[in-house]
Length: 258
Image (cartoon, rainbow, N blue to C red; front, side, top):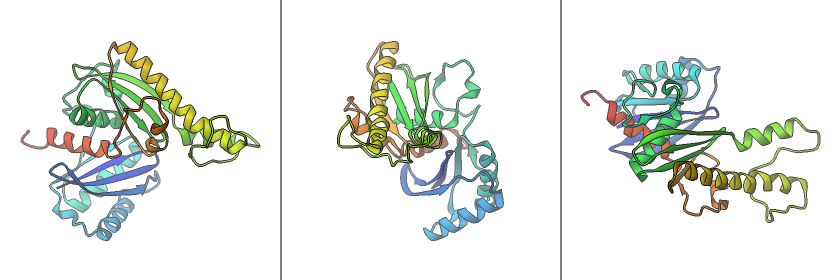
């Protein structure tokens, strides 16, 4: 059994995984101000609540896009489990040829999502992750990571729109009944949901054209279920556990003795 930790800008997702099966998923808020000791207390509290013995883990693995939190969590996990966690980064075995300008700059979440999608769904692939930012990455039919696009996330974009204008309110990301909306809130929701869906459709088509083939498209992230059902590409696979699956795959590829 391992502890898999995915650190995002908004949330930290903890996965308890045994033989590839995700037994528990726990979410806590990402806080850059917390120390290793404070994260240790928080991890102890949530795992005790779920009846999880931290000393029973074979090991752990961390993927993070928030470097200050990475260091705090490494200290917390080692203190609680007695074992140093793996951290996704340069030098880790992934099984992919990374064909971008500087592979050392590739964000951990992009590595993890791509590895998971290849293991679960085959190639070629477009992987969409809809969180604080929306990322789209491509893995070709040879299993090479080719790069992709980074788009401002929906909540980030509409939060900026609301804070930067006098008359536009904060909104929840829900689909209005009509694309041609007849009030301000529904007009914003139309743009957020249908506009983002159209953006994704267009980007998928352009990526496939540039790659020269059709791709399996896999979407994950907290906002995927709010938008993907409204894409014209009706065969997009939504997998909310994709990053935890990828952390399991990477742990197995890199654990001692491999």
